Length: 127
Image 1 (cartoon, rainbow, N blue to C red):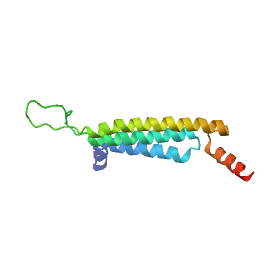
Image 2 (cartoon, helix red, strand yellow; image 1 turned 30 degrees about the vertical axis):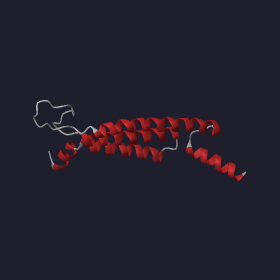
Image 3 (tube, rainbow, N blue to C red; image 1 turned 180 degrees about the horizontal axis):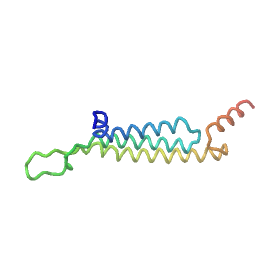
Image 4 (cartoon, helix red, strand yellow; image 1 turned 90 degrees about the vertical axis):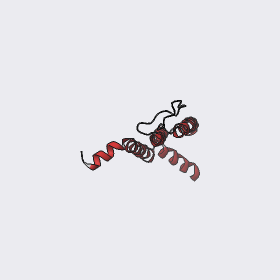
């Protein structure tokens, strides 16, 4: 195995989270459909969650539970996992809010395509 393949194999979580973030960003930037944009944002959020959980992982580490044996133990950092739980709650809340806004946009304009909404808004401004 050459150096690049070994590097990718050792850092597969970071490569995977970067790949997911790029997929989500591409979805947000290229699709005019508002639902697809929300899906892209959710993919980006998931990639950030994977990245932070990967940072806290230590090969050979144990859960940070009371050590009664007295031997030195390598622990996995629990802080990224705790922060991600908060991040998941915030992400779900933002998704629900965005979807409710899309419902209101659909009721007002009759479409969820951003190009058509902008066209309708420019026609309203010209009147």
